[in-house]
Length: 149
Picture 1 (tube, rainbow, N blue to C red):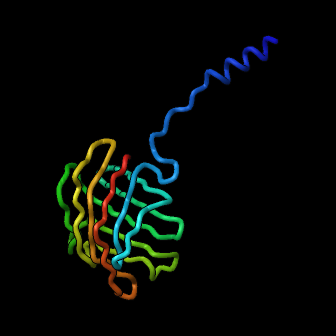
Picture 2: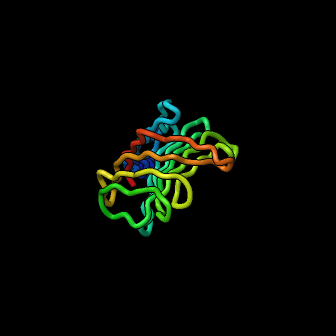
Picture 3: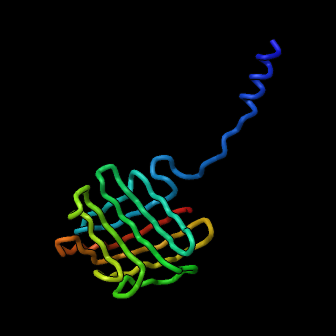
């Protein structure tokens, strides 16, 4: 009887920490338009801020993924993706390497605008012209994200 009493107290006393993220998408939202078609990260959205590098990534169940990366950003503002800049954008439409389009300091152009940045959250918008390995371009427009770290 004593074992049952101790076991029931132990099991009812345990409490799992709350996770404020949406279990279906992670910790936020990410949307964009490509070729005029709206897309939303329906599988997962994650943001990481490590040693001055911020990466925001969203994906869906059809192997499509969008990502933006910022280097040395510590406050809201508009950051350019252009020759010589470290910031980048990426759009992937499938598993084949030719389905990945990149905009970075070597190829492509664009902007990433941060409207809110704290130790726990990043929010903003983005657009970029990206290229795949065959030098085919893809325009990503009306990108938006709102994610917790």
